[in-house]
Image (cartoon, rainbow, N blue to C red; front, side, top):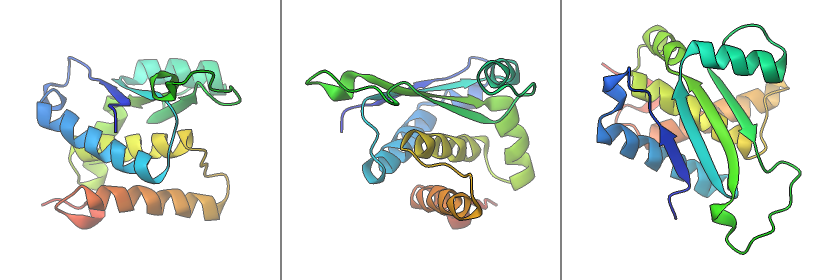
Length: 159
């Protein structure tokens, strides 16, 4: 599979700059895309609460930060190229600040929480939503399934 995930890391979180983090997140993302295909390239931008607040306010009318936002760039747009993998498909924005807080609450690493949020975002780009209890359970189950596939500690718990 061509490298269809472009990860953008913030400079102010050195723990995320280790090459093993990018390798882990890329492998995790590709697993999700194999099971739930999304055409084209996906940018994954790790940023801060200020940026997520701005995006959440601008695009969802919610005047507060959030942990993850997904934007489909291909929704309703036909792919008109023979190289559909080269066409931008979507963007996922993750608040590293919010991910850090959630990682502490869940007693997981920051890398694992960023991975969870990334999987959630990819599932949205693949067309899934959590507007009913049933679809929420499906997305949570799928997210945990992929995290377990890429973790030595199933269930997301780390010692």
